[in-house]
Length: 328
Image (cartoon, rainbow, N blue to C red; front, side, top):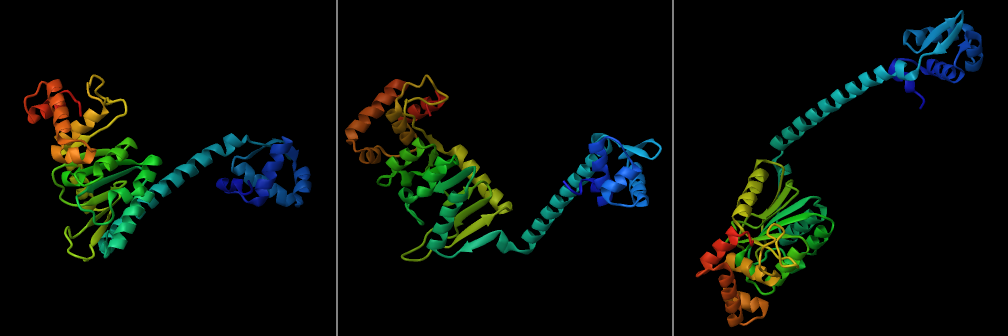
């Protein structure tokens, strides 16, 4: 608490004198001098400074009382806070200008080259471990870093509340074991969609950092070269690319009660919704049968049942009806 009256332009002696007056209510010069251990002249000088600062008033010959602190100090503190706020804004503006200058002068701060599979894998794990709000990803067929089943970082991130939006390439969904893996992720909160093909593998964390391979196809034991992209126009372009693909992709949704949150009248159960989402995503019936451990005939019978519910004669009509009725 010492130094409180520096905002009023007073020193240590004046502050001690003001505190004594506040505690005593009133005091004369002689009493204050004795308490402060000062001469009468020094005490008189301190009181004159306090009167000039609006902290004390004379209530009788040689006798003084304090001015209420909220009256004496309040306006000064408000002005000082305004000055601090202005200075903080100026510092933030200068810091942003500095960062912009550094980004222009040091491109390596914006794009970092990852020269190996291990470096790429480390960054993919790091992005998910440090994500706080959202992870967006393009998942293409044929893993480069690690199979989806090994991505335990996603499960941990979902557990702490990080949102995941993942777009899967159809060929990846058709790989052995992937349907169950995707369904498991959806059950934990992942939002999943599917498209025929994706232009690139990519992961973006908190719209602040992206990682993506620079060469899409490597042969033999060749190491993939990737880029870590930080805040820049390039990152904004990658985010825009994801948003466009997300709008075009087909949702893959599963709920335990068999209903969609926005479609309470949907007549399909969870298994039927999953089957329908795979059909609309373009996964062949033969592949669905293999992945679900069902016979092709069983899958065809279930598809026919979906068509009957929709009053559809073709799979295209089924997809159209599902979209119109918001089954997916």
